[in-house]
Amino acid sequence: MTGSDEDPRVAELRTAVSRLRRELAAVPADFPDRAIAEDELAALAAMAAGGLPETPRLRSSLLLIAGAIGSMSALARGLSQVRDAVDLFGGPPLDRAPRRRDDPDGGA
Image (tube, one colour):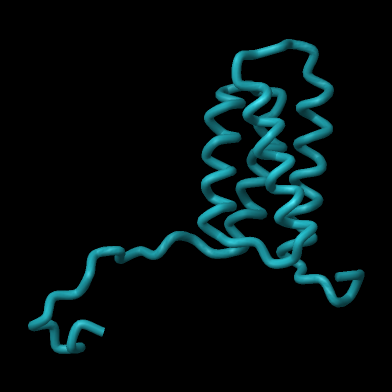
């Protein structure tokens, strides 16, 4: 997709991921889960480049990145921007419990 054909959520995700990747690369300290953060950011970038990504996969990558980065204050803003971009694709379903058969909606 190019320019005006692109979903604005995908463009926002790509921008946020790119920014966090640059910020992470600029951090001189090595930390145990750096490779995990780098791998998941690369996965997010690939998903964004491929068009409309799957929301559960986005959320999974975001969780792994947040866990890998931890509380590094230098990356907090970039991580927040990635989270905001992922949120543009919608949150998880609020009600995951199946309906009961005696539900007036007929379990639908």
